[in-house]
Image: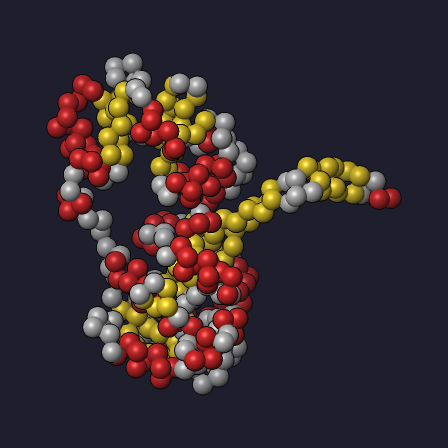
Length: 352
């Protein structure tokens, strides 16, 4: 087939997982076509890479290492109706079409075949969401001298509304909002919106850290629940995070962002007597960074001390110390947009 329609989303089998993830970010897609020469080897999805990271696969490994050989594709022999039905059943946004020799002969895209309404709605989850909205936003002064950080605009909405809407889209309807700084302004603004969110406010009398105020919700939440900061937006469908949290039997799950840094120098490691032990030329280092979004089991609330300054990192350490499970669900670098400081905020509003 002519590969022009998919030229920008083709990678080689030797392409690293990190480079594949970067390409998905650049092309704003979640699926890539993997080729070896002119031979189609399979589809690579963002979910495949996320599972590889969770399984501690090095992102320098080639995509061929994790390629799912059992993915279901369309075949010419199935006919148009058969392939369309398969796409509906799988909710497949893209479907490679193979001939009897398993060669790629065509690619069908959902948007070219069906109406958006034809897409089977994914099952929704109605979990409580705790929004941590009590911070002063000192890094965004002087704007936060006037309005609280959650009400800083991005486009025609505030970042708070954008976060609330994202959770509503996956089925979440009950919100608990921790407030302190300029709480009255926030309550008034939300009360004036045409769309009314079901929000129960709770207020800390003094700063209690990044999770300490959640101790005020003891006895109110009996299911796993989300916790979200108010200074970033994530394009990830949080139902995937919930599925991972439950299947992995985690006590707490952190949504992490895969961040890579290229060091523009040769990096030298030394040993005894200052002798060089290794040399890496312009290495690229990769880390998982906390995005400020979490899923917690309700029992975690009991581990937060009443009225004490307590960070989410303190809770993670406490859970780990008792042998509990703190999991990490990775998202790509460009799918997470942060506005914690002015440079990040300016980037965010340029993107949005």
